[in-house]
Length: 71
Image (cartoon, rainbow, N blue to C red):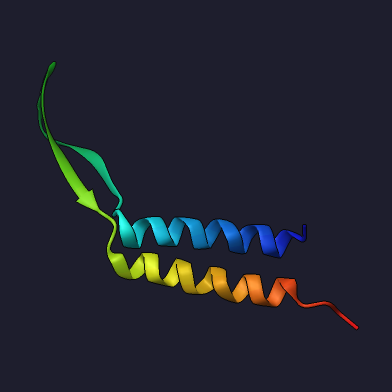
């Protein structure tokens, strides 16, 4: 397979997953530190669905563009 087709397929899969199931991640911030004592906050964030839509659209473009044969 051509590299553009593989990348396009991967983008379609990841974009579809984000749109259908959602994707979230956790980040930690240090909010207070005195000596050895440190207070952290754990934040749960989710990836916006429009990013999944962009990945899906970009993947489709790469699949169509990479699948065409050059003459």
